[in-house]
Length: 446
Image (cartoon, rainbow, N blue to C red; front, side, top):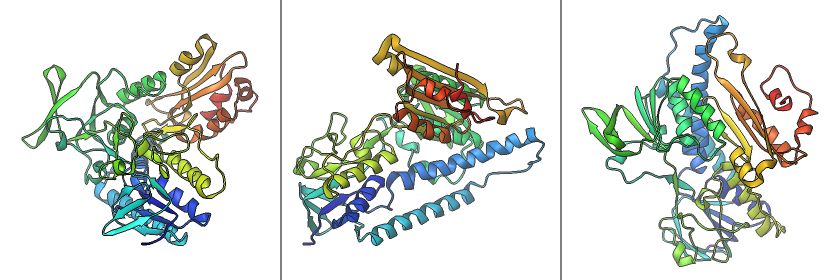
């Protein structure tokens, strides 16, 4: 039986980061991953999504070029060519991941693995043992039990499209739904969003979601609130979507963006004594320990802040704790910055206004500015930019920063550092503005 110090089930962001860090400390590591390396992020998540976002972003800039006196008549989107280029890029990344594992001396076993007990993994016709086992198997799209649901595509299979749908229905109201709505609208689809509740982005600052809804509506995206889908049927070459109240719509494609479920099936978790939480995710403590001694979990399979950088950081800290001589190593799940690659993009870190008021009540003071980015000053299309600071107490310590608008995805990273360092409103006030930029609004708020 091969001897290892660390067995890792899952070759996504968290698993690979943990493997490489453990190997750097001399651990003998094996990674079990039958699918292309890189997990959701590289193959059907962050990377292909951001590339599609760039394609949509470029198409919007082409339209904006007219306001700057630049003639760009006659352009068109070749979706098949775009897909070939995008997929070739992803394949290069898969190769880089494989080479990195090989360089680090890590065994990559392209087979599905399952736990037989807390120290034994079975893969193919072979068994492997190690004192430490990590489960980092990620998640998959979740579809509700609706008749005809499988007629639609999901946030994984959307990348298989060879052409832009003329009429697209997107079911969902979270960040994945709004991201693809913006992308396909910019690429030429007539987009309708079927939103089960009364608003978008319910887990983000309410003003951020409301302002984005305003932008999306002006961009021509149909927002159908309080629309719980009851069935989908194929009829005469179209997809007919039915929702509550007897309403229906006809579309060329339907995209489910209703969340993700953890990949915990057939992993032998019961046999190893690994417990799940009430939502079906692997339950872990602050140090990524599961209920089984010697078995750990990181990333989306835990349901905790399902973001690639979080999985990477959690994996690295776990390796430091197990093999790097740092028994207290763990990540801080508070104040995690994130970006919604909507149109326009949104960046956020810290507490929403609603969360802050719930925690701190009358001690909360909010500063905001809403304006038109100079990029749009020469034409009639003028989407709003929103910047917002949420502060607490007499010293006005900043506990939340929220930005919607051009370059918000790049701006938020630096301000997230300031928030984590305990910045106060007066610290931002003392920072010299860079003019003319949108980011300067955050240090000039009154």
